[in-house]
Image 1: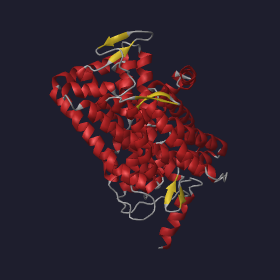
Image 2 (image 1 turned 120 degrees about the vertical axis):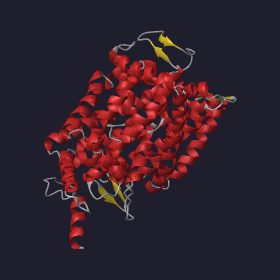
Image 3 (image 1 turned 90 degrees about the vertical axis):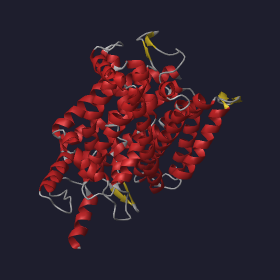
Image 4 (image 1 turned 30 degrees about the vertical axis):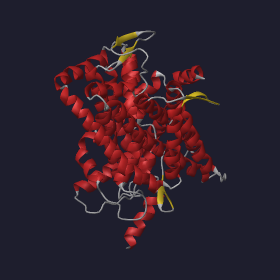
Amino acid sequence: MQDIVNAINGVIWSPALIYLCLAAGLFFSIMTRFMQVRHIKEMWRLLFTPNDTNKGISSFQALAISLSGRVGTGNIAGVAAAIGFGGPGAVFWMWMVAFLGAATAYVESTLAQIYKEEDGDQFRGGPAYYFEKAMGQKWFAMVFAVATIIACGLLMPGIQSNSIGNAIVTAFGSGEMVNTGLGVISSAKIATGTLICIALAFIIFGGVKRIAMVAQVIVPFMALAYIIVALVIIGLNIDQLPGIIGMIVGDAFTPMAGIGAAIGWGVKRGVYSNEAGQGTGPHAAAASNVSHPAQQGLVQAFSIYVDTLFVCSATAFMILITGAYNVHGPVDGFLIQNISAEIAANSPAFTQMAIESTLPGLGKPFIAFALFFFSFTTILAYYYIAETNVSYIRRTFKVPGMMGILKFGLLASVFYGTVKAADLAWGLGDIGVGLMAWLNILGILVIFFMAKPAMKALKDYETQKKNNVEDYTFDPEKLGIEKADYWVKRLAKLKNK
């Protein structure tokens, strides 16, 4: 099974996808005149714009849901894997994919807002919706929807729960080993998987607003706590920080594992962590109730900074400053070995050891605690994304019981991921991420060359901002944007008031 998964990943995550992610980010950065730099102040202001109606969710809640998808095991175990297989220089390429990816996140999230639909008291949208409406290719939208349901509903949740299980075992021990139909499994992992599934079931059967309520409380609290611990460790070793930054930048271009490994692992784990271009973030962006589509695009661009430049950097600095890492060679052995060869690079162990070496007694339980909440909220975000795509498919195919199948399929995936090996879980997750990234990036590039709706929205928003309007409006027909039905109806209601 592992060999089959590795072979599929070798095709999906070829150098073509690595450079496509970077090239798309650079292209959209240039086209938007580096909006991720020009509009930082506006991004911050928009975060706290309230939702004054009962429809949809607020910008902050949408940010929390998208961050719950972005901030997860990729920020802790994923950064460790990037360093372990690509060397310290891989961190630089994570930064690059984040900086450039912020522009990609703006484009995909603004498209989700432009082409969103009303579904009762909530909004639905995402790549499947804008592929159908902006590209006019429903078959392509269906392919993305099916790929996303498989990726977010079955493949990727196992990575998150796997990291939780591994962190619990590292922190508290494996307990007794139990013979099961899935093999010999740690009783601690069985208990952890059961607890996660019970908590998940309670929330996912409560709908998107319950998911938003949980995410907006847990994500900011845990991200802040994690960054504070990182700052303490960095502060205690502040004399090493300039050398660590120099090592990251220097190894990015002449890395010990070869420049291809550094770029490949940096981009792969960067995309997995911040999800820019992957097509997951637009689902949460579409759920937000805003007065102009570009507003949510800007908020989602800011979420890339929070994820990679803050949380991932915190992890990288802790690992590198304390030397709690190995770097695997291109074939066998290690190019750098600071810790035991038995410690897996694609697990949270590097990060746990980094904190433990500076703050004895805190590292292992703290990372287990942080990973539980980070990964748990990420699984919630994955469920919401999969649910949105099931809703999209049900617009055409009225298959009964699809939501129920999704819920129980995700719970089974979570339990299985908790108790099985990390390499297989990561491999399956990488397939899901790669498929979505290929489809979404190619799709938004085609839409750009067809009609440029996200660019038109940005220019319109900047014009209104320059004119100091009090209440922003969006008129898609005036801008030459077709099939943005929600915004046409919304504008008509405002004019009739």
